[in-house]
Image 1 (tube, rainbow, N blue to C red):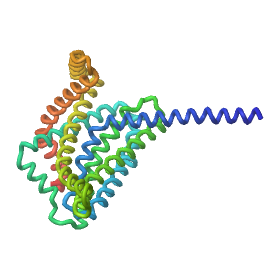
Image 2: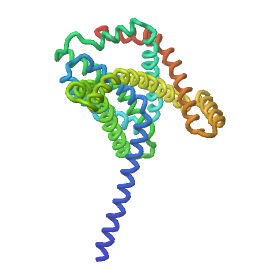
Image 3: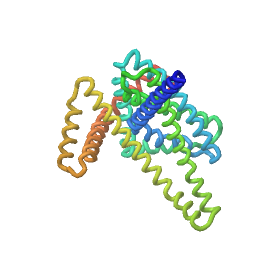
Image 4: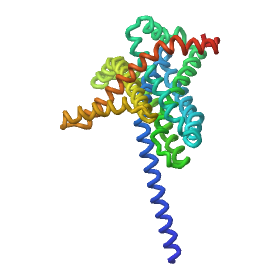
Length: 321
């Protein structure tokens, strides 16, 4: 009898340890997902353009194809690479993170600059209004979306990896990254599915229902375009902010603390000036400064990419022209 009691006690102890481990993994996964917010928001803001112009009955299937590609990117390709890096080349994580941060700054600055260049806006509009909705065009759009997702997913997974303590086991890292990958993919593409079908739902309610439901449908139809615009703005701002933040922290870790310390000093001074809400004020100042630095870096990168990087890629791979 005493042996059975001891066995049950051991099982209870193991269960408590397992539960604590699960809680720890879930908590770290939530923290990692929150840290990658900028890339996540931009992913949600970018994806709807790939279904624009297709028939309504193809919108959700296209979103589903992109989502499957995204989960493949994260779980099959990027997760193993991230874990191998953490084990064999942890020193490479910070530079890779900064490279991704620079990409976010560049993309954000490109979107900002396009507001002041009509030709860029025209090209974007042409890209999002297909002349036909054939299967070939659909596959081309899906492939392009998955390629874009790969870059954003790589940034998300790298950011997530950077939040995991180096002392954690490989299994813990795999679990955390897997939870982040699945959770973010479901959240992003579930959100995208709701967005792309919102106008159809609104039209249905407005035309097929009466009273409050019809009014709700008209409201959805009216609000959706403005919401999409706001989402794009928020996504761009988040890209620039997170990219700048990554660069500032990366420079600090690599031994150039001036940008980080300067921003931190300004944030502390602002917080001290507003004692009623020091935490919020410090965060706002920090985010603003990181965003400004990110935008400056992005604007610097624009001519470099246009005049050096793209011609070099075109010379190596002329078929991409």
